[in-house]
Length: 114
Image (cartoon, rainbow, N blue to C red; front, side, top):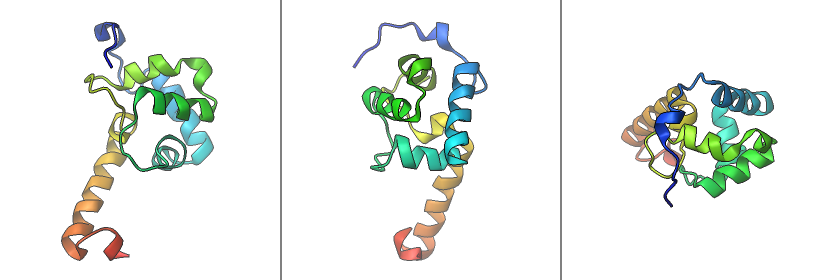
């Protein structure tokens, strides 16, 4: 799906108010951005959220009133058409990627490591 919104008007850092407020709401409820991602935004572990899936998660979080559609556009800076954990918490996404790589190398898979 193509959006007719010029993203140069929305180039805000992760510390920008709508993103910061969203991250605070997620943290307040789940005490971890990663846990919030897994529990409410991506419970099916698809790793990528469409605009509709993201809107559903933000609505369940109670954050919809602050503009879930605009927030999606702010987070989807590279216009890939989906939002992933890296867009919300780049450090956590990098740590999880490293963890998965190490577990796969040592045990063949993350599941086998447990």
